[in-house]
Length: 219
Image (cartoon, rainbow, N blue to C red; front, side, top):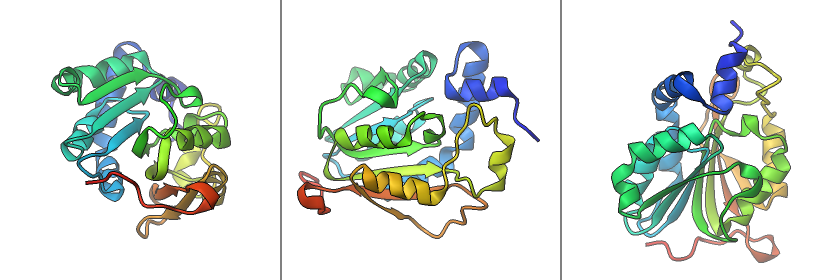
């Protein structure tokens, strides 16, 4: 069954009462995949972490539980989602351990080499330019930093039900090639069947000379 366009538009940019409902559903439907990606990132206590497309903000608290001496940032293009994420994590925001900003991936409001780890779950479908977006993610990451992406690929028959004018599902080879061009060393994590479930891609940012370095300052 094809998903209604108005629901797809809310997934891309949540607004109003329907947007709040979509956020509530997403917080439950995608939680298992968020946890798997967070586990794969192996967050250390001193890490600075970005949840890119943080949406409802449920993952921000889970990341903060691991980055106990670090900091967690959430970025989302939806004003409503940022509001929901801040409300969900009010205590952590007040304590200065979590910060949420409204931003698209095109121009992230962070300096170069800011983050040790980046989480991105079911978000890249809405990016107009995959190469440019991944280059921007690489810019804000430190050499050796870890980047976890969860996404359905074009090989999954389920993607046919999503409105193609809103969602764009890359082929796995395209995603791997784009990440490599952006300066990452990507590889599939686990043995997921891309025709049946979302894949989990784990990538490390290369350092100077194209080498993959261990992240610095992890403890």
